[in-house]
Amino acid sequence: MIEVLRKHITTRLGNDLDHLDEVLSSFKHISTKRNEQLLQQGNICKNVYFIAKGCLQVYVHDKDLNETTRDIVIEDNWCSELLSFGSGKPATENVRTVEPCELFAIDRKSFQTMMETVPQFDKVYKQILEASYANSVYRINTFVSLTAFERIKWLMEYRPLLMTRLSSKLIASYLGINKDVFSRLKAKL
Image (cartoon, rainbow, N blue to C red; front, side):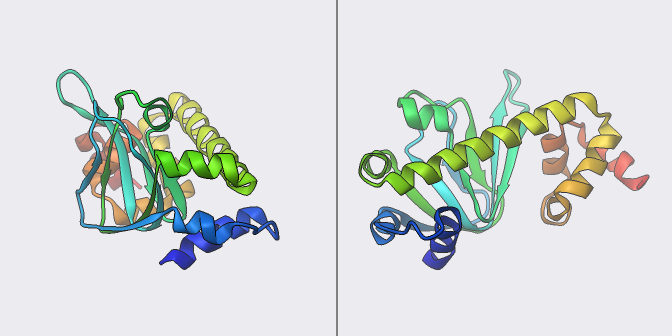
């Protein structure tokens, strides 16, 4: 499984591979089952995860304990609650596995050491941050302007794998649509 992480990093670094083995040794391999809680809102986020296999849900609960999904993160991507991870303050989001997963986790201390001692790691981290920010802004801006039906069509065009991998309830939460409305609109496609 470590080869998946190695390939991900080398794709971003090109031939600048000094210290790659040192970076890889800083990650801990974790195998999870479906619906395992990786981070609970209110706890401090202690890890950044690379997803080698599987799918994670990033979500929040409102005051009535209704769940809203901020993101669904699949293979070959990174996931964390970066504000909590960076500041050491309590997380405002939850992270759980949607499927059995193969993850590589790096804790805060190892992460900071890599940032200070391995310039290439800093470069990869900046690329991760930029991609995460761009994805979030794009999704928010897109969803604000789309009807519920248009959001479903967007998902089918840009993230079609999610339609086959996730439950209707989870997809509806990700799209910001009531589950019954989602089912009714999906039937019209």
